[in-house]
Image (cartoon, rainbow, N blue to C red; front, side, top):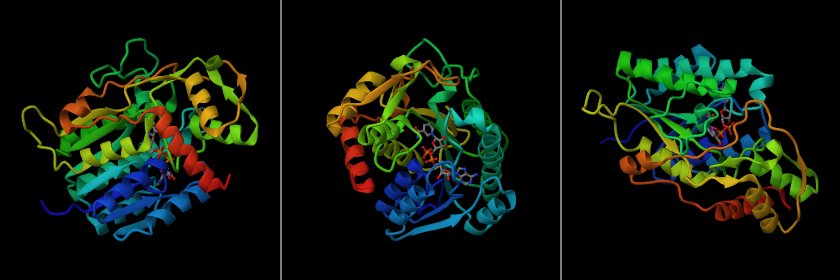
Length: 329
Ligand SMILES: NC(=O)c1ccc[n+]([C@@H]2O[C@H](COP(=O)([O-])OP(=O)(O)OC[C@H]3O[C@@H](n4cnc5c(N)ncnc54)[C@H](O)[C@@H]3O)[C@@H](O)[C@H]2O)c1
């Protein structure tokens, strides 16, 4: 098979950077886009791009996927054969404050990417979904066959919408599409709005950390290298066979560690690694949050021979080592 022409969206982002880097390490050429918006520290986004630009075969263009004419032009010029779509407005809590930015990036932007894929006859669209599509439920672990029509945040609603939008393009235009439901991703170059980063920063600075739901939450924390490995395995496995029996041209997979951890364990492990005690402040649950997540990853393992396995302590040690280097503490 000839080398695919790869487009990665959201490459200035946490997961996008690691996926692009892994592809570049594997000798692929990778074209990337991002709008470098100010949802969190743009210096971190630029620093990620600076890391990527050290590698040969890397190209970047600043594009807002909600801007239809820019996305049209990009697809016309690049003619990608493999699209890994990770650009999105993430975050549960911010979707209560600014739902329109989710509609723009995750609905309009997603449609623009779908249209680009359709017109360019893309071999495979791999896109980011989220564990948040499962909503609040008691039956664990979460399976891809579960119904996901009761999201409890607008962010989650946009991710549910992405899955069914991609399904319609698969059905109408035979666009091979695979949605990956990521479970609470953490690691070096991570997101400053997420618990692992927020807690680490607060512990180093001696400031209190907020434990929502009085600290009684469980998350299937998944290390970034495992996520990047999963994405790259799915994306480079070749064009899914449209019309084959069973049809593999539209699929959804969980990518999670399959090992939920209590919030208290996250905090105590960080305390041990950093060597400082956290000041904690317990608060009620926040609207939009779920109390637990837990991935069944047997489908990913069956089809791609891989499932995440990095233990929380090892992943946190690698995160804190990066944090110390990056922030000089
Ligand atoms: N990190 C997680 O735990 C997690 C969990 C589930 C799903 N996801 C999904 O994975 C994907 C990547 O998430 P991440 O954690 O790397 O987040 P991130 O915010 O670090 O990366 C997303 C990138 O997309 C860019 N972007 C946003 N809107 C854009 C637009 N309109 N045009 C162009 N670029 C735009 C941002 O600037 C950012 O660099 C997202 O789709 C997210 O919803 C992440």
